Image (cartoon, rainbow, N blue to C red; front, side, top):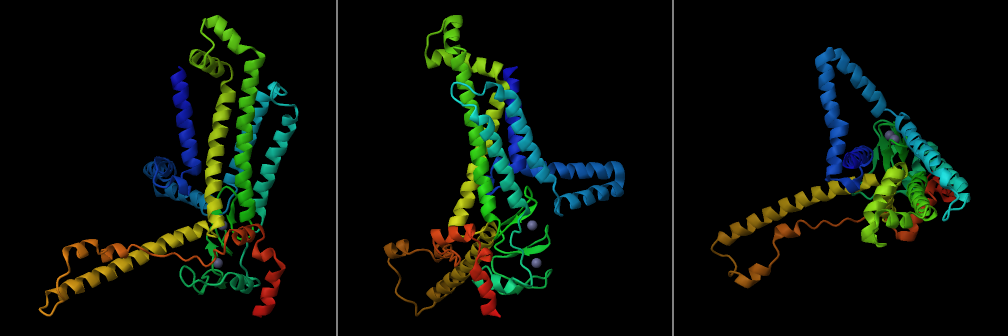
Length: 391
Ligand SMILES: [Zn+2]
Ligand SMILES: [Zn+2]
């Protein structure tokens, strides 16, 4: 029975994590991504085929149009889902664990600080969701171009075919929001908003705060259980009842049984919070790394494309050169043959072809990069002057 409960817990968590976070870069190529793909595309494909089989083309078109409006147009489904997860988790914590506060370890103040912490999380969520991510308009496009010059590697002077205005470097046209966004990072379904020049700071604060929030919850539950243990003199009771010695090995199985039996809600909540806080930490770490090197998620994809293309070009060049060398080696007036050792240690031209340098002109040192996120260009007074200069 207990094993069934554990299996159920593991499967539920796997499904939830894969569904919510399977697309995150840290899970690329792992089984989490595969489960995510099955849940999001694979299973949906089967469902579509089933609808087509039962209801014919009309049914399938109806499903497709619902999907289009839910997934390719901005909509608040995931925002509502986030608020629902947050409020239900908090509700479960309040109903299951607040009766044990205050206790030996936690003061009554945690009843109030917890609601403040959750409230602050919601404020950061609303700030990220509803602030302008840095929409590029005909009015501000010249300023954006002057603060983000083209590097002529991954960005060159182009016009947005939809907005009919020049595309500043680092911007992207978001097809969901239907607008160009400066320093575009990604379109976040959870926020129903793009993450761009003006709201990356709130997004980072949101990630950090939710990491802290989940950790706070998990640690608070650990303290609640520890104080129950102490107040009910459980160690003493167990040693007397089972006649085991007062050691970790002797007590651990009985203690685990007592905890799972009496406080299963708290334990499930604690495991859930611990896992979410780890995910938040990983996601925050990834984005911090991007911020410190002044790169956006969108640019990591662009650099990947650029590097693999350059590698292919270099390889083609190197193999053409190797071919030319081997042909000239066949001709009678060739150079004296290279010693065996020399040719052994000579680097293969194909291996050299793999080296492609990435020069990010927007990376101007950690301090500058952080300032750019915390005080976006478009909020500075120099941004307005950039317009006067350019006009
Ligand atoms: Zn556009
Ligand atoms: Zn968007």
